[in-house]
Image (tube, rainbow, N blue to C red):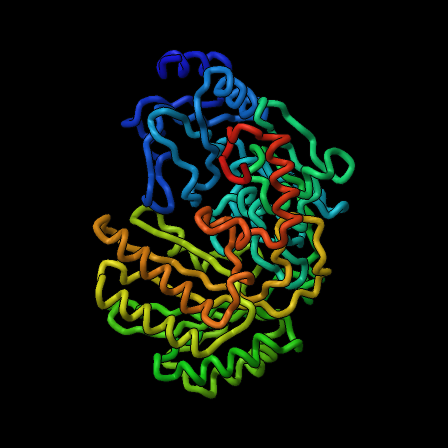
Length: 459
């Protein structure tokens, strides 16, 4: 079917509030095309913005009937939410919203809902749930891919209660512990490979679990010079391994603003306790003598506000995340050297940051009925490469790979861990541990998406 005929057909099928965009110069098309990263971005022949769940189903069915390939988009952070002129993007930006059931401690999230939307809606109910570190990240993709450990309640995927799921035949399937429970297991960690999830119901929790009634935590910012690296790592090891309080945080290797000429260690810990207790707990860092420091309260609804600068759209950004078995000071030193080497050889990548993220041991039950398989990982390497010149693609990519290798030094290859929401290049064995788990996912793929309508992963 010709692209113009398909656009006309779909326009006639969808509700009046939906949009079928076929003019790449129109403001709506241009706005929808905006991505967190321009790396690998392609232009489809149309962008469809369904307004209702039924519109999403109709879009998928018509695309299947016409043999038109498609990809979903929710927030625009995914490097896989793009397709060329042979296909369409199903942009869920108009189909969004959160319904909260505070007495049942549940919330239902629709397709294009972003992290900030979820946080803002839950806050008046004094409830929280697992959320990411970017306000404009799509909630559903984050949950499907596992999420990062929240010490009080575990990984995001663990907190999925039920889902609305479109399979490769365009059928809407209800998924829960009682309806298609085997598919629920797969959705919790690999749902993006099995079909299109239009809606999730997730668990929520009262702020009282955090030790206060407003979702407050204390957030520190401590900036050190590279010469203080050994002392910083020693202090952070004590903080990360302490069971006195629940804490998490990032130790970032970045170039310091405003002139971006000085490499620094930016340590950003978070802790759930009073300001006085936090000041005492972070004393090992303070004693080192940071060149700049701050300790401020923040509430759940503002969880990601401090990272809004990272959510800027455009340029070329590559984000990779690998799990680490433990904290290695020697490996981290090598990481700092590689960061300095990158900036020296490619000044265009000056906004690149290499980050070690830690979480104190999870207080929630570790065992998950999920396909995710990384519930015991509390330490992650986050690599954010950020540049503007396409000529630097290969250089930046090679340095990214060197950084991963440096932090994996001393780890057996069988124990390598890659976060599946940031890579589809690494072997399945890195992304989903244990042969039984991989076989289970492949079985689900054959049942619900045997020809790879949604992705070719797991086939």
